[in-house]
Amino acid sequence: MNTPTLLDAGLAGRVALVTGGSRGIGRAIVETLAGAGMTVAFTHRANTTAAAEVIAAGPPTRVFGEVVDVRDAAAVHAVAAVVCDRHARRIDRQLVEVGAAQAAQLRVQVGVDATG
Figure 1 (spheres, rainbow, N blue to C red):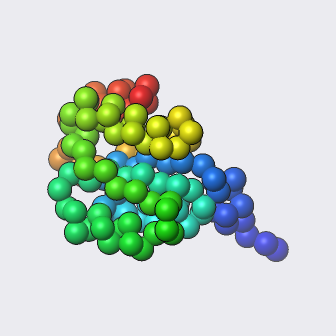
Figure 2 (cartoon, helix red, strand yellow):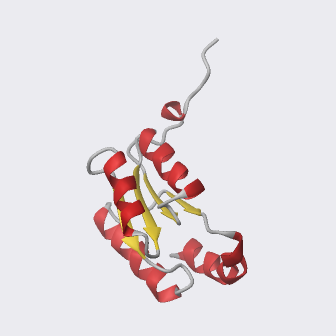
């Protein structure tokens, strides 16, 4: 019996935006989606070294990092616009991954992210 993989899920060629993608679970999500053939833009607040490692580990031209604080609604709108402009005016998937300490602050932001 064949076990389906992410490569079989129709993700190839699609675009994802992952917040908090430079380390931990966010990084694993970025790497998994890129491995499934998606172009992945991810955000990080300040850890440029970790972000550079994620970009270097990903497929060339398919993984991009953007500095943004997801608690800042204007910054989230701006990064979503940049990603859309780069990728044929679309984001097919958005994944929000942040630490528990930021979850309360993010509740309002999720609505902004969902409406882009």
